[in-house]
Length: 307
Image 1: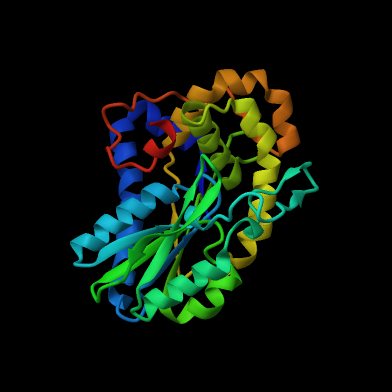
Image 2: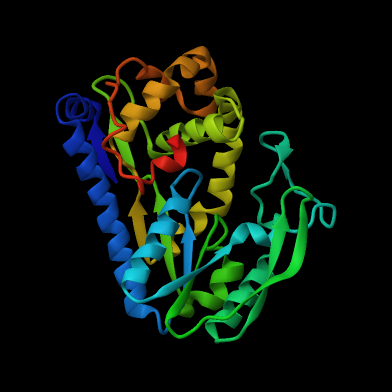
């Protein structure tokens, strides 16, 4: 795990912002290229690419950038959304989250993982499959919505928190490259506890949810314990199966996210401790703002959270 001091981040933001942003982006880009090289080298025998990671790891953007990097290497990447394997609401009982008193929407029981595993095995064998589609408005699974077969120069990318689940990995380890994405860095203030990786992901999610999902910061705080429970139950036990890892953290993002979120976080500072996020509240007012608009590349993973 990498560690960055808040003093270093603030210094770079104040006096060297353009170069700071460029270096952070380059480090992330180089990791994606290394993963693309590995997938390309093994694509004949491992045409399945399983991408996993906890909430707000930047899976969507990294998936897209990985696909483009593979295209440059002569490998076309098909995409499968794990969301399309949700089961029709009403055909099963959503399990509860007894710790937080809410339905456990993160549970693998909400998905048809055996069907997904079967489909991926068929693709690896060169067979055609009929992909379902999940209609989120009606919460209904629509079977056989799209046909897919992999050509010899193609791989399929599928991302989701259950992609390393034994139901899938048990039969596919020999035919799949597994990639784990996360924030794997921490920030150390001059005084007080460090800001752990999951806290940095919270800032991403709080920003994204408030901007694009009509969900205020206080709601993200309330949901955070349940999100973390899902990660402990459904992601952490299997992360060791990853062949490759990518740390998606961009150190300069702290200067943007905390500056934008600070007013709302101050209003709900008392609730942060209950979500195990107290160190975030302790650094409010200590992070230097950064003028970033002209320097962040259009393909940055940060746009997934700030637009």
